[in-house]
Length: 244
Image (cartoon, rainbow, N blue to C red; front, side, top):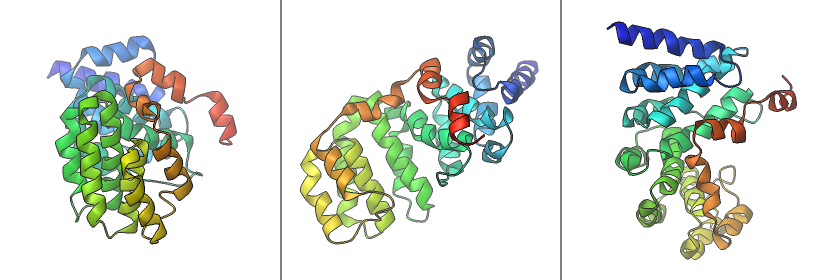
């Protein structure tokens, strides 16, 4: 119990970490291993905190990225259920969090596949949960390349029977991100038939991605902790651009 209480207090320090936690703080949390997973999930899923003032707004992002290093499947369900999509005017912390969630889930590779497919196939589930599960599955192929063919086959199978424009858009987005050029005909046919939510997927970008496959689009799932901060932020420059 003493260890659990100690790690809870240590994780609270992420609320004051600014743009990135110190290496010492991050290592303290990571050394706790499984004991840190529960409190990190709780903080990572506190999406209301993403709307707070800096530095507290970045705490859920820090917690999310540390979960990506611990790679516990326990995070899948709560993160998917906490996910929501907002517009481009949302705070920087929320934008970064929304970008990172499917990538962090993708870091689990094959360990995440069954749970993510279950979310995709839950017709009673929220569309946001189902769509982020699709995107996470595509990122999982970067971590576990052996999943690629099965994920493409699964997306094609579901696309063939999809009658929801929003879900059709995300199934197509998944295939496009995977550079599944063999699906070009069936995908573009859905655009011509007006069966795709164009706010989710555009015909022009989909065509480009399918005809110019690149696994680099999914490489962000492979970023270790500090490289993720270097590549994704947050930074003072991003805050200035966002009007902070």
